[in-house]
Image (tube, rainbow, N blue to C red; front, top):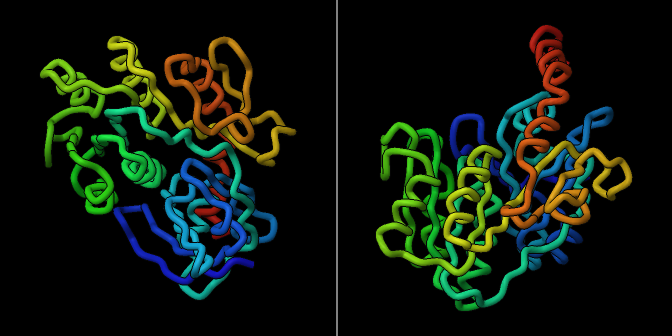
Length: 276
């Protein structure tokens, strides 16, 4: 059992949790994730570790309500417990001196991007963060990201704050205006990561993306999280979750992510009707 020691709302349907998980905190590195199970009979689902503290034995997680399981997680209060928190899983981010690094986050992607941007800055990179959301109300971790980069640029789809448009458009504009980057990291919704990779690919900027396909056991046994990268089948749980974005087959991954849409909707409808 894993106690929630702190909980706060970051944005509508988006919640930050501080969870007691000393063994996970001890081993965590940027880019890694945990598999969470809220209660008996619940499904396991991945959440990236946003931060960890070895001294207090806690990890920070951010979750957005998009289905039954994340909805159940949102209802767990401070002082209550999660049944399972397994990890840290996945390969850590490759963090070393690249030079000028641009970290691009869309929506909830700001959470997993935070420890990566901090790590990149700590080893001496010049870090620019481009943070985007549909509107200002949905933007999360803006102040936190501002502390782990040299320049923070904001984009919103509706223009409520910062650049009026997508993060990929802002990135392209900044490069055309003379900014140059040696390495890029993009995390967020699949279409956003694909759009960013189209921009960085145009300028031959090596780009890492963090993928979050359907995941069951986190060990590579089930095959549910398979992705194609440069024509090779890999597994996000053990080979990732980070991959060369310029080699990801985004079309096949998008198709896989929609495979269980009908079942997910049925589950949500059942919860709404029965409360379980």
